Amino acid sequence: MRGRTVHAVVVCAVSAAWLVPLALGGTVRPFSSPPQSYYLALGDSIAYGFQPAKANAGLPPSRFNTGYVDVFAARLQTVAPKIRVVNYGCPGESTKTFIHGGCSGRRDVRRLHDVFKGAQLDAALAFLRAHPGQVSPITLSLFGNDLFDLLDACKGNFACARARAPRSFAQFASRLTSILNQLRAASPNAKIIVTGGWNFNVASLRPTDPLFRSLNTTIGRVAAGAKARFADTFPVFNPQGSIAREKARICALTFICSQHDPHPTDAGYRAIAAVVWAASGYKHRS
Image 1: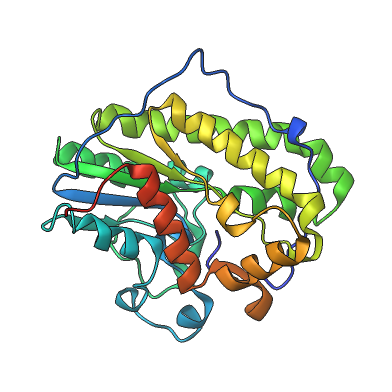
Image 2: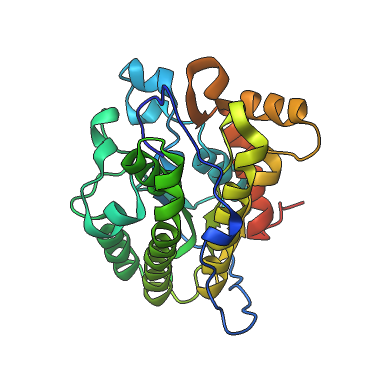
């Protein structure tokens, strides 16, 4: 997601049918490998561990240390104590900028955790090629800014979003497929875990929930096609049942109710880390 605070986000109720599913041509089994020397974290502000108050205070990257990458890494160290974290997460990154460069959110933070030039994908591939067989797991968080691009282009207009959604999401799926296939080719045996999204539109949860469920379904299918694992955060952030319960959960796990910002609180990042850990299949040492 973008690093900047979102003061007003209008999410249209997009039908699940508007998302173009990917044909996988059969069931695939994700690779399962133990942690290696490096954990590579990729993606947007969620991978960075962005929180609005820290950004507004101009804190250095070392103070953005409660993100899901940090929590997950701490758990990894119970399995592989010497594992090192490389975090290329860039606030504002989308699948477009991940491939072509130009991450807009660099200006929202003082600097990145691990600095790179050009496109994040190129940096990731270069790192993997420089450390063959030494990188696992790899996590990837990319979804929010692609969605924001659609909504921003339509300026919240429902008819516009409905007309553009099929092509927009099909292109998102295609770009994500390309990203994961290249990561898989560069690191054939790595455990790759892709995170999903959540619905932060507390003013209209039920009409807009299908959009995010469908988005997560699409991400999961793309991940499976690259023999990656999918960490579905939607059920945790948006438990189904009563509207009041769902709203209370999203208000507790993000800053959307307190600061009009959809990024996770510390509790939210811990919740993502728990889903990623479960998806990883790793077990704590007894």
